[in-house]
Structures are given as structure tokens and as C-alpha cells.
Length: 280
Ligand code: NAD
Image (cartoon, rainbow, N blue to C red; front, top):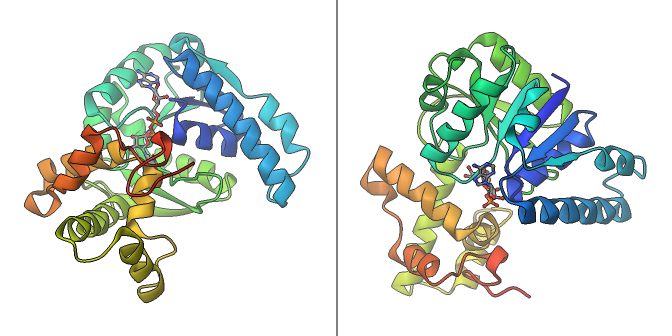
């Protein structure tokens, strides 16, 4: 498990690639968008320099980061991998499409890991010839700083696949929890519900965004408020998660109308400059 290919160079893909590179893996990152790859490279280098200046990373990590290979071509990206970690948009047909293509490209031993927040590794694995080698590795944002990886076993995932993926996460200096597949796993299911309730309260005029977040941080000891966290995740991503949980788990997960309105308005959180808060 030395050579790892990350598919998708967005917020999560680049965080995963960064953390893998400084953990001594050979990393390839692939995206269909040349622009996304350029942005990822810039952001990864910027994050590294910031981490070095704050003492979180070593000067020698520059060498590891410089070795990351950025590719648009999926075939080239998948050819030599030992494990593929997918971090494209939260859309099950898109994820299945990517893994079906990889199934034809990758060598037989290769493990398929999806960084989905909510969706089914069983459903993805069933569309490939390697359901026993398909699993979810759910990382958290920002990947270099968040300690947990939820490792989610699909119906057919083998013990060997679980152990190998767990070792990769441990080498990345992460803690692992083992989860049996169910929509939203442990964290997204809980987090989406809290976030949605906070949005409903804001819509109902119960309190301002600042006071809702302050109440959860100071009263319930959450390190971040649910609305600032949703802005960090991206409101479009959060809406996709809610829609999937609503379809699979029912009424309790109906997305808050305010969330839908914000996404329609292009208020996507930090990445667009405005969500529940405004950003410079
Ligand atoms: P993002 O929008 O920042 O990035 C997605 C990237 O995928 C884009 O660069 C896009 O160009 C690329 N892409 C789209 N189609 C592709 C394809 N066919 N092949 C290769 N690349 C393709 O999204 P994100 O926030 O990084 O989320 C990615 C995944 O991680 C989602 O499944 C999401 O649910 C999950 N996730 C997100 C967070 C978070 O906080 N954002 C946390 C945990 C898990």
C-alpha cells in the first residue's frame, strides 16, 4: 500500500493528497479539471508553508509535497496505484462511473476507497468486479488537522481490505473507527441533523447565526458552531448530503428550506465568500 491515487482535487482530495504525501506515500492526484489541479497545487503549497511557519510541518516535508503528481488522465493516474481514494462530488452515479472506469484500468490487487460522507460502498462495489475490495474512508475537513477517519465496511468488504485501509489511516497519523454501512455512517448522520436543526432555528427567528453557534460552543462544548461548520463544508455539499439522507432515512432529514434557498442564491459558504456568514 505505497502508491495512492486520489481522484478529485477539491477541498477534500487536496487535503488527503497533502496528508498522504507527508506520511511517506507516493501520491498521484487526478481531476477532470485542469483548473482544479492548478488550484490544488497552489493550495497544497500554501498550506505547507503555513504549517511549517506554525510548527505543524517540517522543512523536509517540502520534498514530499514536491513529489505529488498532478494528472488529468485517469488511465495514467490509475495504472500503478495500490489503492485509489475517490473524492469527487457527492453524487452516487458520478462515483459509480469513476469506479467502473477504474475497474478496467487498475491492477487486480487495487483497493477502492470512497471518501463519501453518506453514501453506500456496497452500492459502489457491486458495480465493479471487486466488491470485497471496496470500502469507504471518510476523512474530515481540514484533513491535515482532523484526527478521525471513519472506515466503513460494505456488505462484502473483506477483513483484509479493512485491515489494509486501517493501516493506511494509521500511517497518516489518524485515529480509526470501524463502522458497518448505513446511510450517513456515524458522524454525517449526527452532524447533518444538528446542522439542519440550527438552520431551522435561524429560519424561525429563534436566534441569530452568531448566537446559535455561540450557544453550541459555550453551552454544549462543540468546538465549532453548526452554522460555521456548514459554511466550511460547503452548503452545496451539505444540501447533497441532506437530500441523500432524506431519501434513505426519511422525514427527519428533510433539508431546511433556508439551506435550499442559500444554495439557489449561490451562497455556498466559505468557498463562495458568503453562506451563513460573510468571508473576505
Ligand atoms: P469539491 O467540490 O471541493 O471537489 C470535487 C472535485 O471533484 C472537483 O475538483 C471536481 O472537478 C472533481 N471532479 C468532478 N467530477 C470528476 C470526475 N469524473 N473525475 C475526477 N474529478 C472529478 O468537493 P469536496 O468538498 O472535496 O467533496 C468531495 C467528496 O468528499 C464528497 O463526496 C463529499 O461528500 C466528501 N466529503 C466532504 C467533506 C467536506 O467538508 N467538504 C468532508 C468529508 C467528506
